[in-house]
Image (cartoon, rainbow, N blue to C red):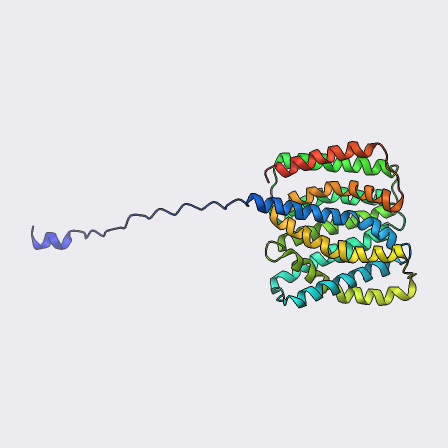
Length: 318
């Protein structure tokens, strides 16, 4: 080989062989123990919420609606603030405050206020329509907000359960629409948004932190509202009104939401929301014992249909 050939011969450059990309590690499923615990927590939340309407009806026997709602929020915030302070819980990150504002608007202010105003002219049976529609509405909000895509079987069972509850509650109220329906419809939408955002935040912080900080965020508004409402509304602390106010503030507004958000974080917002299909029936049962209302023979039939739908939604793949 001549020197000229060596000079003109192209130089070979070694190209390293491509390294195969590592296989994506599949996300491990939630342990069965976590799912069971989450289901129990969500069920406890539903049980606590089922007493909200009867306790509100008791509270309205001696306390005006605006005073009842604002005092309920103040008491809940004081309890939550005491717990947060005692345990030295750090202030949430800045990115969480927008979500906490949605939770506060939905479950601390909006839903309690609108349903309390509705219960001035509506029975607890009629108001239970809101809770009957809430699981389906929450699932829709969750699908839009978090990108969750439950299966077709899930949606079919959810729609069937919602239809059964609607038919039952409308039959209980005689099928008549009242002025309270506007309040109930608004409460349905705003509460579903609060549940969805709270369930999302509960994946990043403990559930009781979510409701605790939401209550603290709404405390100034509730204090001002109470100062304005109390001089202009009736305020009589009877046995019923006191018990109703205390339960609504402690049992429903704080403890119920603590276990509810923990449950949603464990099993997901759509599936947890379907447990609420049983809430209207529980509310009607409590109403019999606490308010003296009467149930029709349709109650056990609806209960059976709802329980079947709950079983299907809990087993359907999300």
